[in-house]
Image (cartoon, rainbow, N blue to C red):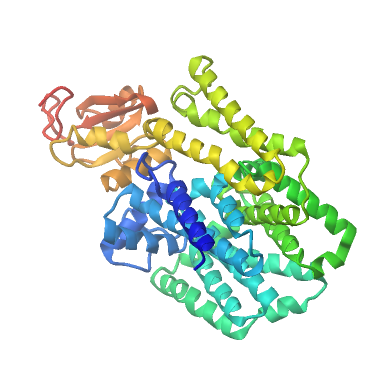
Length: 549
């Protein structure tokens, strides 16, 4: 291994370790998906069941098992923790970055580090690499699928096509049939653009198809045999109905993914747009001849970037993570843009470099002010804001001065990584406590557990889904729902919105209700409710009141 290769690998290891792994435990689960998916993996592991996803003791058939399997392996080694549930996404993101590096080493040597670091530092990649969800496993396996396919297309080695089919199977196990559908769509449109349908036909290679079916289908058959409702729940409800209707209340306007894609590509968005515009102009002027040159890769990447965005824009259910598989394509298009301009010794316009520097430094401001934004729901104007804006301005000016020098484009990757590293560090070191207090159920669960003298059942009443699923994970309990008439007959704890004590007393009739405390950051109260049939004056054997020792 050359000294340059060793340096590249050390840089990749360092940046992936910091961007994806560092501080995974700094704040608890955020949103409903993280604790829900982690709890499914925990229950599957407890049952030693690798087939049926289980939540609350019942089959949970929304998603295929790849993320659950990964989490089960991590849990069995490291124990069940929130940070452990995030490790699979961090590992998958690292694997994706390594695949990008390998691809450019083989097909576009000289700019492999640019491509890998740009991919690793996109806002969406950093964010989803730190989330216990199925989005990063899909994005990573889908990316490797298409990179291996294009390597086969350009080089002709069947080994690459075999790798492509293998990771397509993993992508299907990550999130279902959307992966092979999008892959087929992207490859098919690329073949049409080249005017050669045989590309698509040659891609249907029997050994590859056999490998895909051997890897992907056994779980689907096994889960269907155990759970006859699987195809109806998974295919009809969570694929077709999710796409065609607003069944799960994730409706957004048609143009929703345009700003989402722009934000997902931060801090590289200015140059990604420039790369797309330059490619479209070149394709318009050169036509089919462009697809017969090395620039055919750029057309493939443009199709790859556009298809998921367009496809999910047509969906009636929209979530930011849906287009994550498209983001690596934009990052690699930018790496190709840098390669072309460096090789041809063409400097980008000065205004483009200044605009990039400005927008790349801007995330420093909300990152440094995250505590106030999350807890106070405002952007305060004062000394703190002045310091944050000044820091962003200094970084922007320093970036612009560096990039405006001759051959400044060669330094684009490292110069831009400075605000990325500073922003992530600020979020983890300054903003993480605020994120934990305002958005995670972890501190609430800890506060309640410190008051318990013995484990008690728990119920919820009119709380947000993220609170419900978060408490279920951190307490490892099946929660009852007052909203559904599930009022436990035994003594139990109840978590409800702030100021709901009178409603609760009406629901439990003559049972004693004691207000134990309030979790102010999330406007939540929690109560002790006596067992049915107990005298109103009885003490709380399962709890100690605040201040009691």
